[in-house]
Image (cartoon, rainbow, N blue to C red; front, side, top):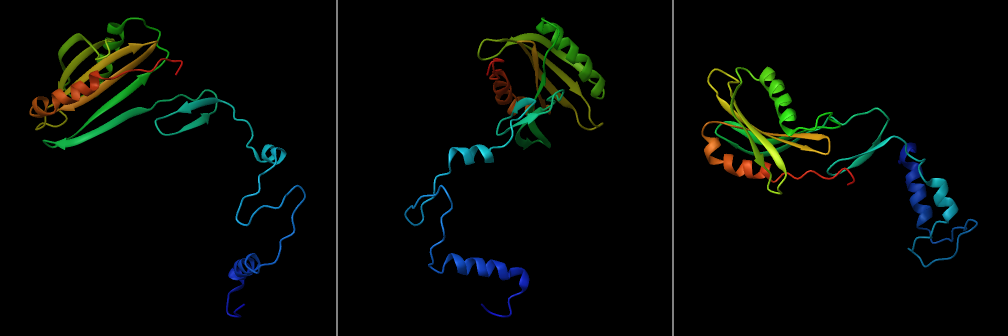
Length: 201
């Protein structure tokens, strides 16, 4: 071994030399001879020893992952699907979910969301308020608001409300006067293709 190798790295070199010196490595109890390069199967007892402890709490499943949350944790995710930036604004569709609602009326759910929006958006004014239908036939409700985030910029915000198995969904998209006519129809078709999963899934 070269003498100028620092002590910190010396064990790495020594380990490498031992692995490649061609000498037989003694087998531990329970191991059997296998062809060179093949993995030795792990016993079931050893697998049980190495298994992680059982999880507790609630299983949270997202689009690409899942994890176990402690009790009393609540999912407050707002899903954002981003599209192209056109006419000075970034177009997207957001999906807000409210679970375990104590209401049975779709209109009641929609109207409860109107108040929230009108309090959040500067100079918000309701332009359209009517029932509609999703592509899959589920009843929905549509509202269109106009508001001014700045004195120079006027935006139109479209919301579609869905009530399914005590869960309320609010889909939102914003447009300028120009993009309501250009990308607006395409984005509305995407919103109307919304399909909630049954609770059992």
